[in-house]
Amino acid sequence: MDTRAQQIPLLEGEIDNYDGVTVTMVEPMDAEVFTESLRASLSHWRDEGKKGIWIKLPLGLANLVEAAVSEGFRYHHAEPEYLMLVSWISETPDTIPANASHVVAAGALVINKNTKEVLVVQERSGFFKDKNVWKLPTGVINEGEDIWTGIAREVEEETGIIADFVEVLAFRQSHKAILKKKTDMFFLCVLSPRSYDITEQKSEILQAKWMPIQEYVDQPWNKKNEMFKFMANICQKKCEEEYLGFAIVPTTTSSGKESFIYCNADHANRLKATRDQASASL
Image 1 (tube, rainbow, N blue to C red):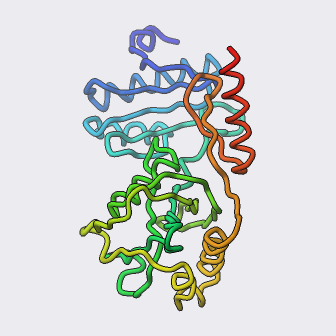
Image 2 (cartoon, rainbow, N blue to C red):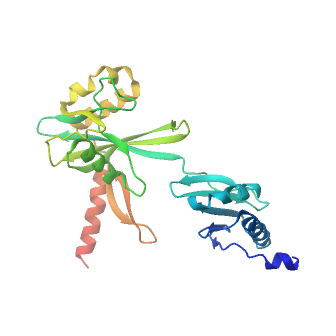
Image 3 (spheres, helix red, strand yellow):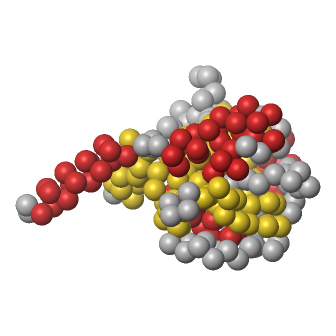
């Protein structure tokens, strides 16, 4: 490396477990200065055997995007506050993982066991607008939110009903469902209500009510659309028979982070009982 190259400051980056480097840009930088530092850094990282290079650019440094792209970087993903670019600089096959490919959503089968009714809504907008279809409360699970807490939140937001998660009853996968690209993972969840008085979310919900399960199942929409027919049939089985789904078992990862295993409800109860017995014996 010549003397001039040695004088060019390298970009600071964090090394990951896969011989990659993540550069998080913070301070404003002239595009030409950035290009020189990036070129010198890429040469240095190649000499060190690094592979995937990630550059995180906040909105305020959007002026550096063109410079990074000109040096072989491509878009990986964008969030409201930043853009992430990547480049594979090794001669080995590119193993940079794709951007998040799935969106997680859930629907709530909220059962009033006293009346054998289920909670249903009609939406003001979206696919079901003006279709006269009564559907289960549904919604997208937020980033960092668990399925079991997210669906309870959605039910309360849409209907004012406070309900406790019981189990996941079924799930389905639909490709190219979001923006004609992302896969939609939809979890049908059972919830037990702690309140019964409905207050609709006026911005999204036209009407909400308690409906007999048979009336819900017999809707023309559910009869002529097979997937909805199958889902409605599963809901009816849960309301009328012993039908176990996946309950949650709180646990922790190897790093100590809280997590949840979803498994057969009977087995979930046994796992939790075994842990409780072990804790009591300490």
